[in-house]
Amino acid sequence: MRKLLAALLLAAAAPAVAQPGLAAPPSLQQTIAAIEGYFRRYQREAHVPGLVYGIVRGGRLVHFGAIGVQDLDSGRPAGAETLFRIASMSKAFTALAILKLRDEGRLSLDALAEAYVPEMRRWRYPTGDSPRIRIRDLLSHTGGFVTDDPWGDRQQPLSEADFTAMIRSGVPFTRAPQTQFEYSNFGYALLGRIVTNVSGIRYDRYIEREIMRPLGMASTGYDVLASSQVRRALGYRWENEAFVREPDMANGAFGAMGGVQTSANDYARWVAFLLSAWPARDGQDEGPVRRSSVRELAQGLNFPQLARRPGDTGEAACRQAAVYGMGLRVAVDCDLGLTLAHGGGYPGYGSFMLLLPDHGTGIFAFVNRTYGGPTGPVWDAAMALHRASLLNGRAIPVSDALAETYRAAARVYSAGSVEAARGRLAVNFLMDRSAENWARELARLKTAAGECRTDSPIVATGALAGRFSWTCERATLQGNLLLAPTDPPTIQALRFNVVAAP
Image 1 (cartoon, rainbow, N blue to C red):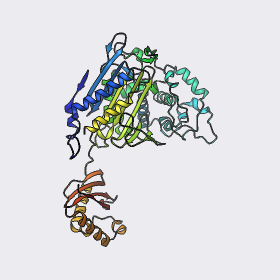
Image 2: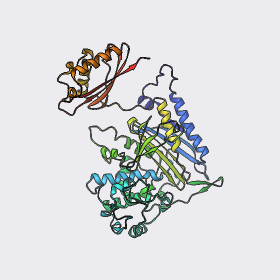
Image 3: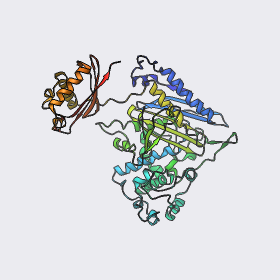
Image 4: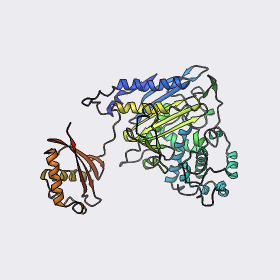
């Protein structure tokens, strides 16, 4: 089963044009077939009863696929309305709830967590110089707690009373807070308790009421036993070459770290909302949380790591620089740019989501097999879109100041003298390189490249910076223009690089 709105994908993409000497990019149909192949192979090789996946673009689900069944006994096929638990992909909802409460002035990220969870005040820290845990430390997994997969997953049904007793008695630390990233489900359960204490209602009801329902996520929530049982994907594990049904876990105190159940149609609304925060712009915020706060989820807070890109292309790709933000893993990929991702592993379920904010595109997948995280095929799907030229970064508008100074830079090259830009030069420009030296450098460039067409548009990298490429008689001339923070903006740096013609 599949749904494809090819027009939406094509409308957002530049034409796939073959470069001289290179093979033509794959067609849209070839790309969709390849993506389906990745997920079918994963479903088969990972022993997954049922799998659904989706691609979100332009604020909607533009491609959907479903493979296998949601229930082995009935054989009911998985579909866009099938309900899956998404495990740790729930953490982003909890993190955004914290930011919403912060925006309302009801808490501070730099406040001590014990200010909102008084049972933490008597905790014994591992060293005499340990800082006490802030809310920010819980969001970024730097509270000093030990990695608690898979123990934390089985705490899902823990009652609020038992959780209170656990907090009051304290937990052992594996290290001092704020010294290293270490993934903690317990830490996100504490964030759920903070949402409860600050809002005055249980964290799950607060998130459903304040975030999920305003986004139209009518089928998404935490109480799986109260949801439509006909629509539920039942959870299984693969053991001794056979499927074994995992017991259903009721919602409890640890749901803040992994208890959300949702459908592909509902989750697409969440992905679309997150992506809508980019780029920063004028205009009214229309979501339940302001755009700037959504972008804050992507602020990697500390302790960067080098990581290999998951999937088939990872072995040959350059390494990613990755950190943990707030409920999202943040990485810069050499092909895809900024990526925000998170997986979910849980008894009976696995999930993965990948956001490409620079391209306005998100990809996600859910399965009903224990710890069956479909990380690889999601990344492979993103790379398939990249190879087909279906991912294109949003253009930054060229400001009036950048356009005017770019014309001045063109006059400088044509005249062979910086005198052509007098009045447009920052105070440092001729202090860093004299007018006489500039004249010699421009003469050298003209000898190498010849006269150039300087009417090509500048590509803005910000309101006060950009890059350009000029076609010249004997070579290509590439350049960068950087303006100073003056009023009006003036040129603080101008750089040229001759690229030999092919």
